[in-house]
Image 1 (spheres, helix red, strand yellow):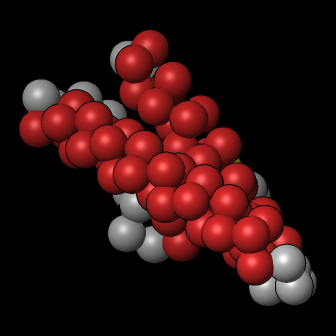
Image 2: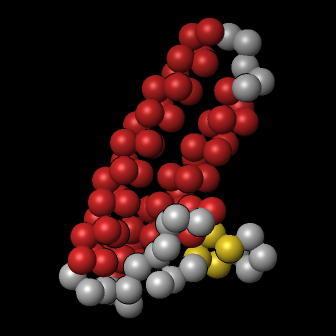
Image 3: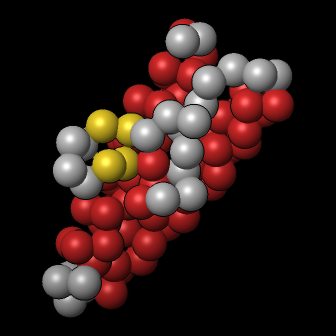
Length: 85
């Protein structure tokens, strides 16, 4: 597999994990200022995630193997591995 795709996949995993963590923490935070910080960080991660997904989509157009993000963000809940097309 192309090294760029491997790196993008790892970045994607980190971003999704961070976004999920922020969502959990944010739902339990009462401090408005801290909640705003979390929301700002979540938006930054979301912007980066969109760029990563575009990079992965660009790889698909070049005929390279890529992750199928359409189902569970690509993560197979039974194996904790990513599904490839």
